Image (cartoon, rainbow, N blue to C red):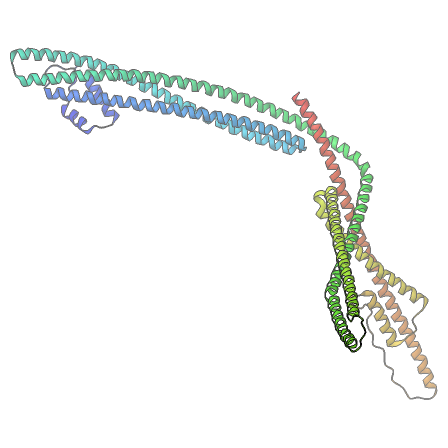
Length: 596
C-alpha cells in the first residue's frame, strides 16, 4: 500500500536539517514505503530526490560515526589490555615482594603475630584483587553490551542499505518510466523547456545512482570494519580469559603461600621452644660472661687511666712549651737588649781606650800599633755575639723539638682516643650512652661513698676519743665544744644538739657552813647536767651514724642494682644475638627444605 507523503512537512524537515535520529528514521520508513504513481509534479520529485540525498548522507555520517566509535572502543580495549598486563606484572611483583617479606621476616625471626599480620595483609590484598576482578568482569560485560549494540547497529545499517538499494531500484524504474513518459510527451509536444527539465532530472537521477553505489561501497567497508572490530573483541575476550586463568593461578599460588606461612608459623613455634630450651642452657654461661664483662671493664678503666695520664702529660707538655716560648721571647727581647746595651757600653769603653791609647802613642815616640788592643776587643765582642747566637739557635732547636714532641703526643692521644671509642663502640654498641651515664653515676656514687666513709671514720675516731678520754670541761665551754664537733662532723647540716641556757646561781650570804653546802650542790648539778648533755650527744651521734650508714647501704644497693642491670643488659644482648643467629640459620635451613 502506497503511503501518502506530506510534502510540506518534508520540505520543513529538509530545511531544518535536524540530527534527530527518530525523525530521520520516521522519514526513512515513509519514503521506503512510498511508490511513485506518475502523478507527482516536478517540484515533488525534486523534493523526494533531495530527501533521499539527505537520508543517504545522514546514513553515511552515522556509519562514519559508528566506525569511529568502533575504532575508539578498540583503542580503549587495547589500552585496557595493556593496563591489565601492567596490573598483572604489578601483582606478580607484589607477590614476589610478599615472598621476600616472608623470607626476610623468617630470617629476622619475627614472632607469629608478625606472620598473622602478613597473612591478614595478604587476605586484604586478595579481597582487593577479587574486587578488581569483579570490576573487570563488569567492564567486560559492558564491552560485550557495547559490542552487541554495535552489531545491532550494523544490522540496522545493513537493513537500511538493502532498503536504500531497493528504493534505488524503484527510483530507477520510476526514472525509466518518467523517461518513457517524457519521450512520449516529447513526441506529443516539442516544448524545449520541459525536455531540458527532464534531462536535468535524468542527470540528477544518474548522480543519485552513483551516490547510491558509493553508499553501497561504504556499507561494505563498514561491514568489514565491523568484522574487524568483532575479531578484535574476540581477541580481547580471549586475552581476558587468559588473564582470568592467570589470576586463578596466582590465587592458587597465594593459597600455597598461605599454607607455607602456616608451616613456617608452626616451625617458628618449634623454634621458640628450642630457644626457650637454649636460654636455660645459656644461663650456665652467665658467670663466664660476667667475668668477661668485668675484665673488659677493667681494661676500659686501664685505658681511661692511660688516657687520663696522657692528657695530664699533654697538659704538662703544653705548659712547658708555653714556658719555653715565654723564655724564648724573654731571651729574644731581654737578653738581646741587654747584650746590645753591653756591646754599646763595651764599644764606648773601647773607643775611650783607643782614644787614650792614641793620645799616649802620639805623645810617645814608640813605634807600636795603636789599633791592636781595639781590634782585640772587637774580636772578643764578636766571639760573645757568636756564642749568644749559638745559644739562641740551640733554644730555637729545643723549642722545635718540644713542638714535635707535642705534635707526636697529640697524635698518640688522638689514636688512643679513637681506639678507646672503637673499643667502646664494639663492646657496648647502642648502649654506649647508657654505659657512660652509668659510669658517671658510679663515679659520683664512689665520691659520695668516699665522703661518707671519711665521715664515718671521723665519727669512729671521735667515739674512740670519748671512750678513752671523757670530757672534763663543764658549763658553757663543754656545750660549745660539743656543738662545734658535731657541726664539724655534720658539715652543712644543722646542729643536732640543742643549746641550753645554763642556770645562773645567785650568791647567798649565809653562815660559814653555807658555802660548803652551795659548792656541793653546784657540783652535783654540774655532774647531772654533764650526764644529761653527754647522753644527748651520744644519742644524736648514734642517730647520725645510723642515718649515714643507712644512706651508705642505700647507695651500695643502688650501685649493685645498676651493676646487675648492666650485666643483665649485656647478657640479654649476647643471648639475643646468639638466638638471632641460631634462628636465622634454622629458618634458612627450613626455607631450603620447604623449597626442596
